[in-house]
Image 1 (cartoon, one colour):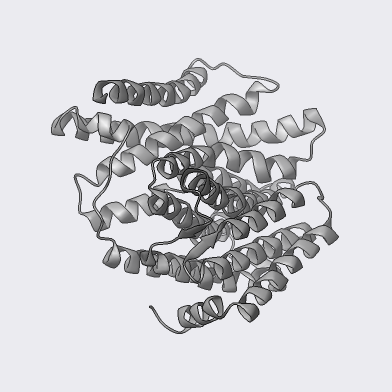
Image 2 (cartoon, one colour):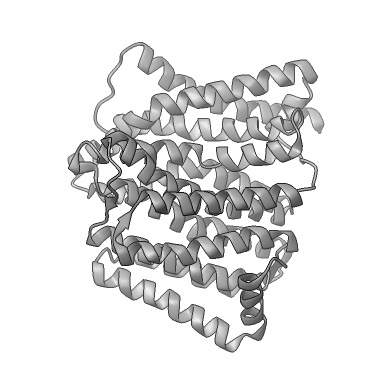
Length: 395
């Protein structure tokens, strides 16, 4: 049985490596893919690199202090998404045509995590256990509290209609505080399965070499892929008559986050639902603090100016909707119970809004999230008391 599992694990590793190497070969052979292949090939490379960097981060826990490993895990979780968004942020300071894309990519990634990533875990849990309520580990209080404060601050952005350097300071400080408390509380030993378990079976020296190679290969692949993937998406949008904003908002995050979704679902299928949800919850914090905070920094460096990134009406609507979804999700999780019907509400609201890409609809959905949040807090004493306690102190 172990042998079969190892064979399957090595097939996963080989597939991920192949996805990375095909794009490296294309770049070094100076082949210029055209048409649909222009975003697909680098997108597949990012897909493979996302798997590899996650395995490398897990393996690193065996060789460095756990606290340091946890900090690295938190950072690499958003690396593929980070590369694409930072490219758009860099270009936005140099070409006005790119101005909408950093916020498009960021808001799409954040809403996708909650609307699909979180809810799928609850659905898998229900299918396996027939239980309609998924109880979160109390250790998640650090993540939930950090995300709550980041969400509250995010409502300021659409009001002032800018993403400025002081926003970056505040959001990165929130991320730093989150990492500090997470490191202090993170006690569990790594549970390596699948590809990481197969690499461990090679022995200590070979495992360390593979870990380093995984980090180097994934980083190099993401570096080579971010620009052509981003530009390929824009070109594909023009050729297909699809709005570039939509492709940047939904297709790019799907490519970079699908591996994480798959890993989380695998954990859920194996009954490790809290571990699965922890992955998704940490990713949301990373993207709602670190990723958003880096946008004005990269924009300022690229433009050699401290001027903020000004938000147009579409960006204001998207950030408001994303913040409202996040606030409702915090109300749902505040009592550390995630029910099937709560997951259904989040899923249906997320999917249905995709079919109505109009400004007034974004405000309607955002308002719906806020109304649902107020109803939750008004009618549920446990949600209300938990939310107040999170606001006041660390539980």
